[in-house]
Length: 81
Image (cartoon, rainbow, N blue to C red; front, side, top):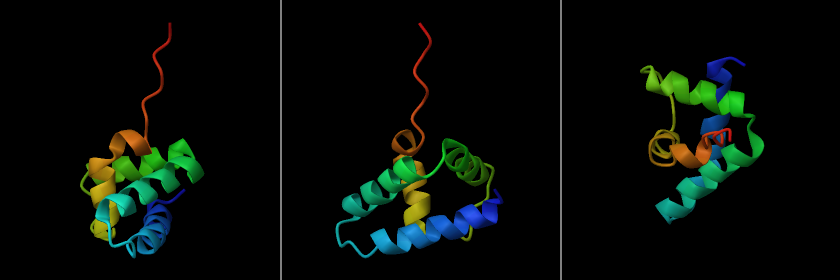
């Protein structure tokens, strides 16, 4: 999927959660939504784009969640036994 489309969708989701006056609740809501409803490949692509210096068009809530809630958005795969 094109990263521009992912950014657009992330911004729409953030706009919904940004209405919550409690920033922590908004961050958790956004992060939880991505974890539950986005394919891991979509989450990885968005994170990689931001980490490579992209993300200027992202809502501040998106950038903050990607930074502060990274482990919730993209939990590491369990180690093989």
